Amino acid sequence: MFNTNQPWYLRTPRRLRFVDAGADTGGTDGQHGRQPATGDNNGENVDWKSKFETERAHSREWEKRAKDNKAAADELQQLKESQMSEQQKNEARTAKLQKELDALKAEKQSNEWRSQVAEESGLPANLIVGDSLEAMQAHAKAINEYASAKTGRQLPKVADPGRRPQAAPNDLLQYAAEVFSN
Image (cartoon, rainbow, N blue to C red):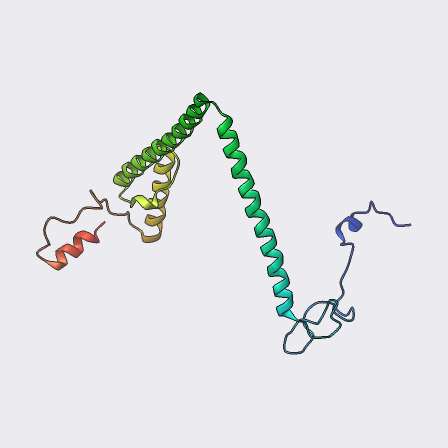
């Protein structure tokens, strides 16, 4: 009956909603913006407290089940550990410690790279992110380019951002000129 291969048929939505289509099923009932009463209460008052208590009891039941499952998993883990030989226990412990050591070494290397890039670029170390030295340098360069584009000047190069000046400047204007110069 209908030719579904026509281009206009594929572009038209299957269900159309017209503006003057009659009663709207969604929205409010017109009484102070409240949603219309729906469900099985048929206009009667809903006992929200009892519904809340029912849902709370249901939640507590699932919480109890989760705790029981956790306890059973812990018992199973202890059983597996007790059945392991001493050599297997030592190997597992060594593997766990090696994994922790590798994570600490990676974090230390990342912090060294971050401080190196911060020193080179003059940015605070907490703004520099990346998982390699090249990525951190690229990120710092992008921040510097963004700051120079927004302000029209480069960020000042600070030799050691964590160090305090040796002596207070004699003249406040001279100090301001040094701080805010390009």
